[in-house]
Image 1 (cartoon, rainbow, N blue to C red):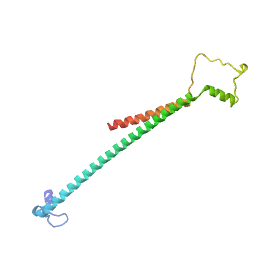
Image 2: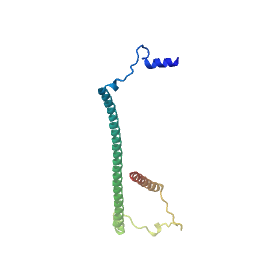
Image 3: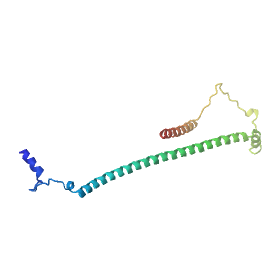
Image 4: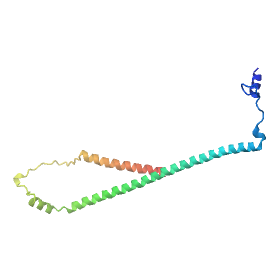
Length: 167
């Protein structure tokens, strides 16, 4: 019985009494078979072009990313140069200020303009300083120093990371 059902399903369209056609129109007609091949070739060509476009877009994305990284490296280097120049200028100004201070002029200014004078012997109070000299650094100075080190080290770590990515 199952062979009979199988034969019926192969030879008849389901639900009708019409037999299925046994031949393929495209095999006998050369024009139709050429059109069918052309349609299949067009599908393949479209897929190839689409794949090429995707690969091209990915390449453009990679180039854009590398260009952004390079631009960031240039900006970082520019900022580091500006930072070093400002730091050097600050050191030069500090040295210039220290060199420009004349103790004699300060003394004359204090005596003449501000009305200051040296204390008398009975006004002087001596303070005993222990032999062990201790320098105390304020917490604010420590935090500022650590902050500067952290910023510089973080910046250098980012530069190293970018350089390692580029190579």
